[in-house]
Amino acid sequence: MRYLTTNAAPPTTLRGIADHSWQPRGLCHGMDPADADELFFPTPRAHAQITEAKATCGRCPVRQACLDYALDNDLRHGIWGGLTETERRPWHNGVAQRMDYRRIRATFMGRDVHLSQAERETVVLHAYVRGWSAERLAYTLRLDLDWAKDLMRNAAHTVDDRDRYWGLFDTNEDGQVRSETAPATAGVFGRAA
Image 1 (cartoon, rainbow, N blue to C red):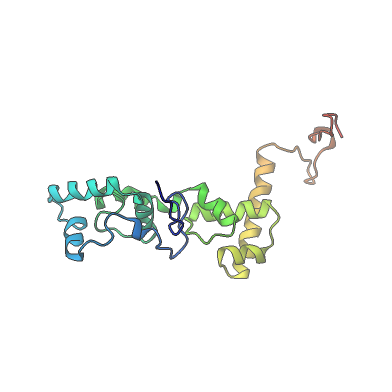
Image 2: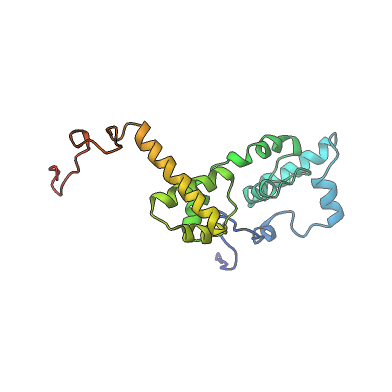
């Protein structure tokens, strides 16, 4: 008979800020600290130790959470998530542009997750389009209210520029939408309203 435990979070869930609940599920958890240091922090030419550490990480159920932890906390030394320092370097260089829509959805659901700069900008744009107030954005992203107001103002300009320059609406010199080119909204049965 197979027993299911309810105290461990499924491995596909996102980590919140300061959430270390994934660490006890790692294969390296409980190792002797000296052995772990020797295995996961090898010298650059210790190929046997690097291979052994990567084999351990390859079987680990929390490898992705370990890599995310190393990237979020700017850990540049050692083997994290099955990648060496050299292999993680491109990931560290692009961490500000990382875009994970699971994190954005989790933010809108009220989770406190670590967001990259690109993810934060996307959250601000979506919050503006959804009609959020600056107070709600400040609370969600843990920002100062004045900073949240500035971000919402910039998001409004971005959305207005997008609509203007992408040709979604044809405007006259006064910035008003021309009635003959305004998109018709369909009624209940597909007729123009």
